[in-house]
Image 1: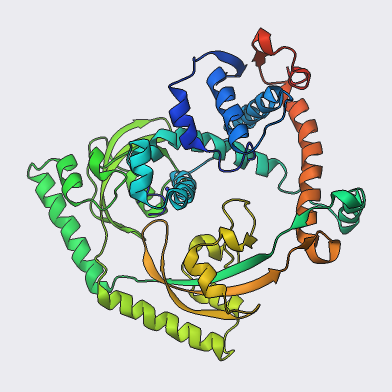
Image 2: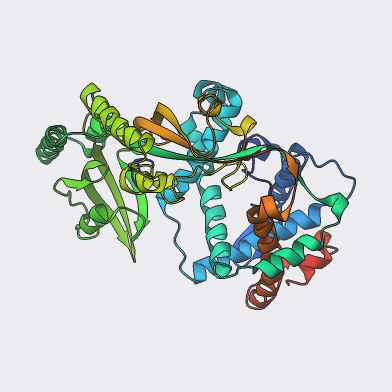
Length: 447
């Protein structure tokens, strides 16, 4: 669930953090760099070096300085993010964890095979790397904030492209851009009322002596906290949904709330502690039951949308805006994001089997049949796919690949600006390297 139910760059994409878990036990911990209160261990560097090899680096050149520099840069962004009070929510962490877990599940073939290989449940794997993901997202958010207003003009894109040697132009495989319209099965008013009454009964049982944690274990629909007495930990304002926060921050220590309704269901909240602007809470979540009638209703709704699209009574953009319930894709105009590249282009080999099959007979600008769909957070429903663009394999050109070339030109400009920003910020940030890495000249400039 968003912000509660799953309480949910470039150092080598999707940093293979499961490799880290196996390697951590095999390296000697030694501090090799300090950035304010943040330390970088020899194991951190070793793991990134291992990932470089996993990603295909086999050169003889020593890239340890380059990787260590990137680790230090990440820490600088984290320090500045904390100074600027940048917030990364539990929901954002959960979303990124789910995205990465899904990627690895697709590699192993199933949840069970992934868990069997690492000897841990998916929940435990997420908890193992939650802090790492939080730190990475904090760094990324600070990084993107610094350069959010930076752009490149068409003239700059053209100049950048002209500087690329003709024999070095990239070759692009055939790619597609895919949009989707999603409708989930939603509970009825009667089902919601039944869930509310169940939550009220739980409060009554707690008030006459039943243990809160035991009730959470028995009844809570939040898999991330149910087995931990409903524990959510310490949170700040802005990390949870507004309705939940409005009640939680007003409670006295030890007090249990009345039933609180959010978009995710009905909550029973207990305040455990308060430290400054943070509160320690636990909760029990009761979500309304979804049955076959809800599924049929969702199917009827999306069938109506599908008919309007085919009859041209509705444009794709209108359908996304008015009907689609998948928040992540809606924020991107309905387009799917490629988890391997971060952009909206997919090679056919990168698509899920059912998606690739659906696209097989589609032309640009057309819609698929209605397909069953399940989101990463467990919601079930239906979706309609839209083929927005398709490009054959080709050598890069401004005419066909302007948006991609612009993205690279912008990234190049950002890199130059980042060098200036880092040099300025490093003047007020304590950075210290271990003696054996003093030879890394570029890093030395930040000290």
